[in-house]
Image (cartoon, rainbow, N blue to C red; front, side, top):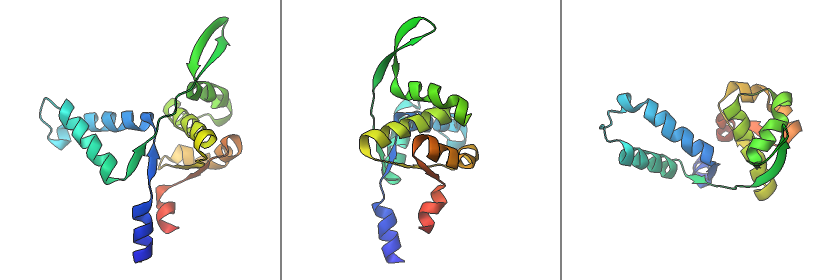
Length: 147
């Protein structure tokens, strides 16, 4: 059991800037339940910092833009948004879920990361389609504990 505990403590979980925004949004919605003072901005930063450190999360940011024509307009678009537009019809996921997976695909291509942990049932139901489309294995966080 101690080996498993040490192994789990060594796991470093990567998060994207999208996840960082989600942390702020969730904490903002829970503000009343958390009994946070009215001037919450510095406190929100502190809470998010605590969560990132306590959960051993690492914020990783890879930003790439591409130039594409859309409806006759040449524009620069972030790569994750472009990937999401290309896969939207085959995966049929919500926008934020698609952006998370698009960002995961970028990390796969740039850093060799090919795992995506989520508790989202809709994404988990489409795990096989995601693996085939993006080459990313989707799993529930509980599976990491069992391994």
